Image (cartoon, rainbow, N blue to C red):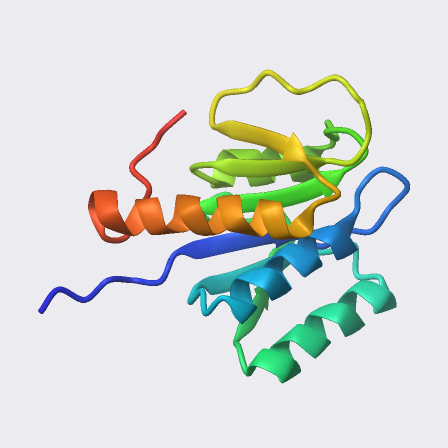
Length: 153
């Protein structure tokens, strides 16, 4: 029997003037409620509210979580989930984009959409729709290759 590795998902939980990390965490909650198994990693600013929200997910769903600070260039994620008012151009986001095969970006305002390879943009307010798309992408990943999306920039 073929053992399939769980997909590696990076969730941007940074809650800033620009980013809506709690929306991204709501997407994660929807995925967990739907039974999605993944290797969960979270990007934060270290804010206590962000940490508490992640700890609540870990406790409520009995999942293992890892943090990622953007300094480890060798990471390889199947999906990066980010929600915000605009697409940030900071070094940490750039590192996350480089570390992920595919990015699902939810935009919560009528900002200019980023034109980048391997980035799928959607409206960011509907966290259930974002979760549905994330689940579709993660399921497609298992169908196509068993453990990785196979999509490259």
